[in-house]
Image (cartoon, rainbow, N blue to C red):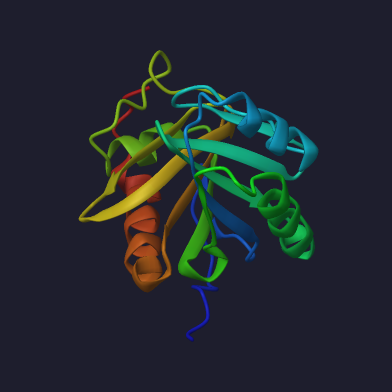
Length: 184
């Protein structure tokens, strides 16, 4: 398997950098079921609302669809969380899959991080439509991506590992000072 993109592109006032690998679990289930919230709670996670994320330290649950969550956690916690969730969800209709090796992560940091995304996605990333705690499945250029904002001035991007080089180039190009439009 190829290594994720390792080079970082430094541009002002936005920094685009690949993030180290971390544990990722895809969880498909009926998110309205009370047993799901209990299983997540036992794993140190909270059930997010639609188009939102919840975070407890380094453990993050991201709403992906009405029946899907993406769980991000430290790589060292992956096995224990996966096994604990599998046990807690036994007998319930669900799918739990380790997708850690399938995705690459990037951080876009700086005052114009929101503008970098606006150049690449059809999603509403205006301050009124996308703020801290927001998450969206969308497209960056021609590929599927997940974007979320842990805090103002920082956006995280997840994409399939096979297109990480393409996404890195898109983000770097959109972050170039010469590309500044001044939308936000």
